Image (cartoon, rainbow, N blue to C red; front, side, top):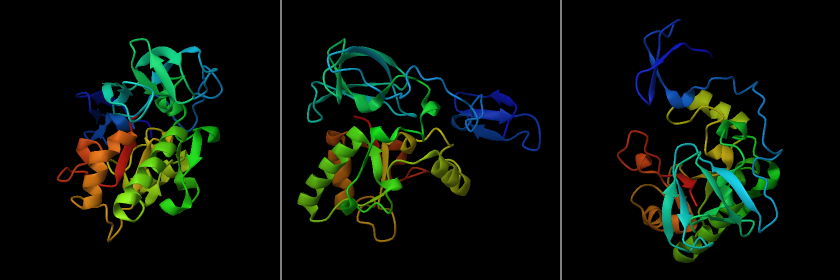
Length: 260
């Protein structure tokens, strides 16, 4: 629905015309075009495409609103060096299908890079070759919900393997990658901030995962499983943002982003 108004700050947009005049909406739910009809021009057919290993490349850091990590070496077990903001242009050398060595010596996973800074251009439309299905024992209810970006999926499986050795049961998944169709569905059902506007979800890039959240979930705030995930998840590249912590207005113990 088109709206007219102005931004009163960096977050809120005030609508000045029509039936909704005088109300405020979050700027994260607005775009200058209709994402259902807009045609995007990619620098390449696949925004995640990679040249041969050893090539130099320029890419953009992708995410919706979270900073992503760089590492001291091409390994998720290496120490995190620092973070890079969304849509930052980076240059470096592709040292493997999973890692880029930036010009300043830091390493960043290719899972968090794309040829375009326009997140909406591929959010909910990630090429199937960039997704990997999670194994059935992780409990995702359908094949569509069980996929993550290829590198993110590999790391989640590794994290799940270690978790199972500690606790004797598996991390169970409710949803990983979310197509544009399901982004529309959940936004219509829940609205913001529980769901975000279509084309802006981290789920839509295969970089977010919801773990079991129903009644009796062993992952609720304060449980041993919750404490383990928050303490160890970053070592596998997964992080729950502070604004989702217990006591926050939109607390979600089940939601983790892959930040590398």
